[in-house]
Image (cartoon, rainbow, N blue to C red; front, side, top):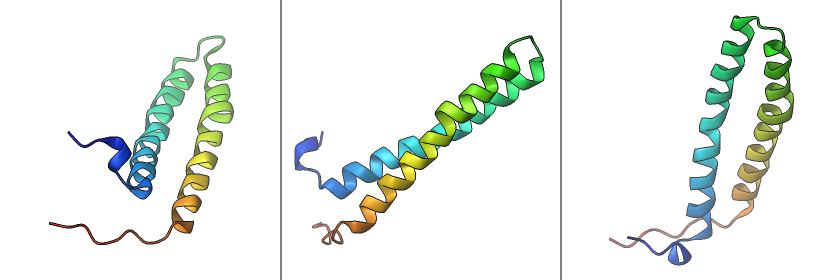
Amino acid sequence: MVNRSSRPLRDELQEIVHHLRQLPAILAVAVATLREQSADLDADVATLLQRAVSDPLHQQVDKLEALLGRLPAAPPRKR
């Protein structure tokens, strides 16, 4: 197992971005399901998830990717 502290910062950030990029698809399914059910509060909950979770998540991932772009290029890995 790789010690996380020995992994380059770029690798750590890329892993975080990768996992965060998967969340909008999960949220989209939840939002669509809630809207399709048409229960009294489902549409409100779907809107809340979209505005309070999904939209800010996209913004944070964009910020992380911008930070990754500011890091120096990763040195070639030794084999």
